[in-house]
Image 1 (cartoon, rainbow, N blue to C red):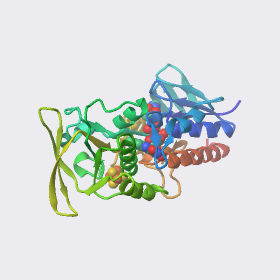
Image 2 (image 1 turned 60 degrees about the horizontal axis):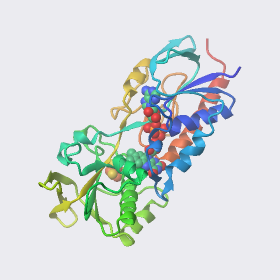
Image 3 (image 1 turned 180 degrees about the vertical axis):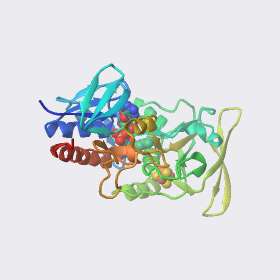
Length: 339
Ligand SMILES: Cc1cc2nc3c(=O)[nH]c(=O)nc-3n(C[C@H](O)[C@H](O)[C@H](O)COP(=O)(O)OP(=O)(O)OC[C@H]3O[C@@H](n4cnc5c(N)ncnc54)[C@H](O)[C@@H]3O)c2cc1C
Ligand code: SF4
């Protein structure tokens, strides 16, 4: 009988790693706390930089789950060390005794309401990047009449000591530019602003997308932070910012403001860290043995990581790491257990 491996978190990292483990001859037990598999990928409409539909990436992954035991709506009740194994109890009453556990618990979107000055959860016309993906995915037009001007606010809950996260979330600059272009495609007459600190368009074709956003779509990039958002009696927004390149204060009437909420550690990260006796960093994400040459290994024998559970990553990076984690687990399981 093939050896079981418990994989915790059924997003892109967990699904991909489970498929790889299965192909290597193991039986993955994939545990997902939400009612469906797919993680954040299941929420996105189109992916940067080319606008590939997210469902064309996730769909084939979900159709290839043969040989993987998966449980949705299920959480981890406890994890205990027993000799050279881990005993994992699930909230559905089942348990597994395994030598290896893979943590692929991903990230949570930063709670934008914590940045009170932007008015998320107070003003109807202030939404997040994820809300905008929901709109695009549902094919829904903004539910407001006459959208003339919209703004994107970068770095919401990232690179912000006060918000408890000084790290860059990596994917939100390119997501803002992608969403701004998509908005212009749907509503060519709308004026679109992006308020940024600096643009981190690090990936292949990302810079091309940024140039296209300026040249073909006329998106206005303003270097400066939004300091205040208020609302008039008709529900329109007034957005105050400073253009730090021109040293000029700005106050713009807007019909919609999109907050680029960053990546925060998944709820429950510290509980899993406590159960397995591994550490989390001061940013709240799991800490690998080495971010240079052992990104999938932890400080404890038999505990591995993949994907955004150890910090912000793109989907291609997540999938590569999932494959690497499966290889690392295979190598570990092929070495005889120390008794
Ligand atoms: C707004 C936005 C847009 C993005 N767009 C793109 C894009 O266009 N292209 C791109 O390459 N990347 C994009 N990304 C990044 C992409 O979403 C991530 O790279 C990807 O989702 C990471 O996959 P993951 O499996 O590591 O984490 P997740 O997608 O977060 O999946 C983790 C899974 O684990 C589950 N889980 C968590 N804790 C537990 C637990 N204790 N027990 C059981 N299950 C648990 C969660 O419910 C979830 O299903 C975007 C990110 C954001 C914020
Ligand atoms: S990727 Fe861009 S928007 Fe996101 S935190 Fe980094 S600099 Fe800010």
